[in-house]
Image (cartoon, rainbow, N blue to C red; front, side, top):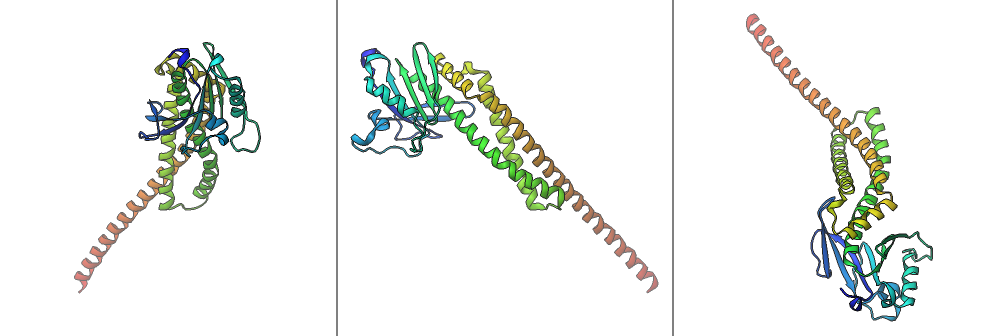
Length: 279
């Protein structure tokens, strides 16, 4: 695309398993799991920067990220550049607070990233959007996993107390099995995400790979994955052991019941034999 054709653009990024009629473009991501990055283009960036003076349009409410592309140089009016810089540092809650912004520079271009907001300044948007989509998907899933780990700690502590200080029954065994399976799924996801960091050459083109790696480095994705793996391993170990011990206990109880039944049958047969002898 030549410089004369470049113009400011804006998209809403949403992740999904199926195509959407609202999306103008989609990018398939294969790791850590297959997902579609759906880009819904807006008529103008001002719908994100300042929509008060524009005609209302229908936008996806459940989008994951807002992206603005500004051509480098004179193709973007200076007031719009300043508006974009103010917009990305603005907290999404609307309370007037400021949020931290990460800046990645590459080949004379820039990517500014805040929570659920992206500004691309350069001469091409598609490679940058692919790298951003790959990062945002991992970031979103990792944040969700970390939130689940925090909430799981309280539950695990209560379950451990209940398991070791009482006679846990069948319902607890079922819950332990479900929790162990969920921990296994989380562990496999973390392994695949870590593999993507190790094999970043799978991300093409090079600009997308560069943006993905820089954003991952600045947000400490690798260290957070390691920490999450340790927490998930601990959770998985407890629930797996609890499930196995309860299974063994139930199997032992079942075996004892069978042995008692056999013993009672033998005693009944002996009693019947004695009865026949005496009577």
